[in-house]
Amino acid sequence: MADLDREPVHGYLRHLRYERRMSPNTERNYYRDIEALCEFLEREQLSGWGQIDSYHIRAFASWCHRRGLAPRSIQRRLSALRGFFRYLLREGLVDSNPAADVSSPKTAKRLPRTLDVDQIARLLEIDGDTPLAVRDRAVMELFYSSGLRLAELTQLSVTDLDLAEGTVQVLGKGNKSRILPVGRKAREAIAAWLRVRAGMAGHDGPALFLSRRGTPLSPRSVQARLRAWSRKLGLSTGVNPHLLRHSFATHLLESSGDLRSVQELLGHADISTTQIYTHLDFQHLARIYDKSHPRARKKQRDPD
Image 1 (spheres, rainbow, N blue to C red):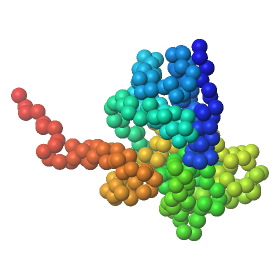
Image 2: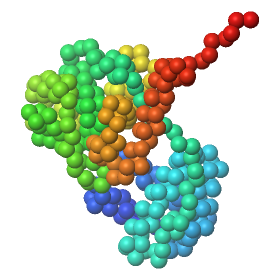
Image 3: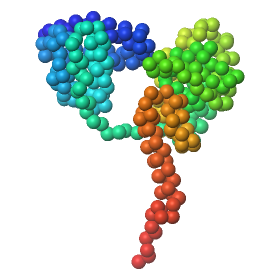
Image 4: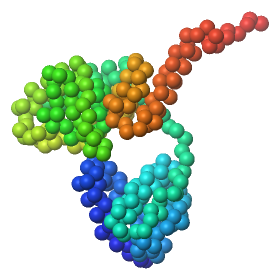
């Protein structure tokens, strides 16, 4: 089996980390996708990046499909490969981008799950005054108040917050900074956490949210704590950071109808990404219509 030179892969990962400022989680995903291509190419006895053409990329996509990979996952892999070969082209390691013209498989548009307002209220009124409960309440309030991504929240420093102004500055995808409003309930929860934080070991560090050991709270820990709270509260839907972000966007759009503002708050570069929430909003309106409009209600059966 031919061995591909992995140094360009490692160079690309350094590019993602230091130039593109990608999150560690995104970097790991890109590595897995590119490593899958390496495995396939070595099976095909290819040993040089310059040997690869669009035929090999299409064959790789088919190989992924035969191994049971979902269309959405194949889309993600092809997207990762386009970026990787753009980097190789920039570095003069290939003459063209073989992934550029390879079409991704079509997928059914899947609407994101959301929590309704009552479920959000149950989640945000968690009991307990232990340091972890106070911290977790602040974490969830901030997710729902401002629509942050997981990486944006775990990278926050204390100095990114301005509770007096009710704002937080976050660093989003593509190293783009944006300032977001923080609601009253979230400000109260964060203020309570800051009082607890001041008594913790390691509290002099910059990270806003700390673990029980005083180290910056990791993305994995945030995910685990949200799952634990959703189980404890008996929520039928497992709670994760993206679910809170989706709920934030959906509830805001239902109330305001201002898609452009929701786009800005979420940090979407393209409004087409935000438009999925218009489908959710329409579903909400359709349910109200079906329940309320005289001509939409089911007809009563005529007596025999």
